[in-house]
Amino acid sequence: MTRICTRAKHSPAGTLRAAALLALAFVGSAHAATRARSAAAPKLRAGSSAAAAESAVHAATPLPPHAPAHKIDWLNPTTWPVLPVPLTAVNPLSGLTLGIIPTVLHTNAAGQINRIIAPDIDYNSNYGVGVDWRIFDYPSQNTEWYVDGGVSQRVASSFDAKFEQGRLRESRWSWSVELNYNRSGTPRFYGFGNNSLRINQTVYTDQQMFARARLGWNITHTWQLAYTFIARKVTISASHLPGIPSITTRFRNILGLGVTHELLQRVALVYDTRNNIVIPTSGAYVIVYGGVASRNVDLDSSLFTEAGIDGRFYWSPTPSLTVATHFDLRYEPTTHHVPFWALSSLGGDHESLGGSQPLRGYGTSRFYDRNAFDFNLELRQTVVKFAAFSTHIALQVTPFIDAGRVFAHYGDWPISHLHTVLGVGFRAIAAPSVVGYVDLGEGLGRSSQGLAVFTGIGYPF
Image (tube, rainbow, N blue to C red; front, side, top):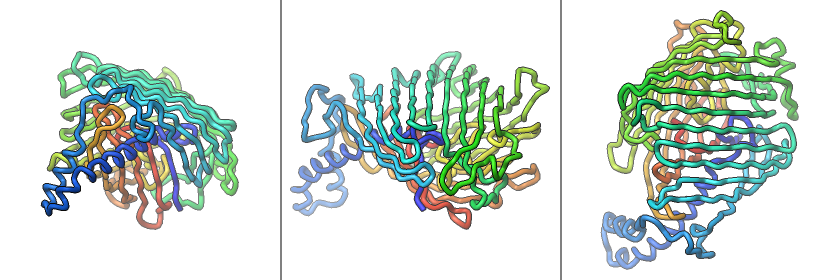
């Protein structure tokens, strides 16, 4: 069974953020490779070595600082002002989606992408006609903002807006604010525990609204003390998909059905020596954190407390290869009537501090329990670089392995009985701010759900 997923948590309306960039990159790669083969052919016929042939290919595809924006060759899609990227997704969870993404990339004088505009119109077999609008803006490496929203004919709708300042930690303070709304009718719940069974699969409608603010005090360029506040309202109700029972029938007594409010306060100590915050090739990023979530401002009404450590490490043995590792260990020391969606969880394609951790052979939050451990390893190998769309593009092939488990008791050994996923990713990189990815993974063992395919903006960790 093949499953196509997106970085948006559950909604097909929150569709392929990175599809446009990846499609443009592969078109540009093919165009550059054609020129390269033509230029390199005389040397190859002359019997040059493999190293000389490789040098000829790279020499044939120089990276000019900035191609003239007004020069359009209608036979070369990489020069078009708007590229109509086709959208096709076949997903047994959310059905067939067909559409088009007319994409515009803006670059600055240095040939770096500083804005992406990517609306789309699509049709989904479950949700009907949908429209989305996205704009990602990168004024500098220190500042970024985006607005991403969409609505479908039935059930699904979403809105997400974020502004972040002080990303490079060069001043005393760093801060960000985010507003989010999401409604979807396709998320799944299988029960609790590391061995929850596929036969217990249920579906529900998830409607979430939250506001998040984060303030970081940059003690030094390496050390930061950060405070995060999240106010969230979650409504879990019945959903209806053919052949899948609703959560309100099989798990009618589960905590978290109906409306739940959460106020989360978290304090974190951050150690960061990465050489680049978006496209790191060396250094470490480690967060030790603790927090408390309550139903209101009175901490006596706490839902749970949390404590954890999250670490990422990067090493480049060669200029074209980066070994990237990530681990996350999260505990909930105390719990009081915790809704299921607030527990530790594994599944999906992207790391979220205090949230679901990547296990790229499964859907988001496939496994729930009180505590969780997760480990990820990627080999990010750059295979080609070229100039296209007035910027510089690099393509990476990334084999990866994910492993993790959820568990109920502190005495459980975190690294035993792991769910394991093997896979490969494809990345299009437009330095310094944009990474688009497609990751394909499949779980090993009896818990496997077949091949999963994810796409999005930004590295998974």
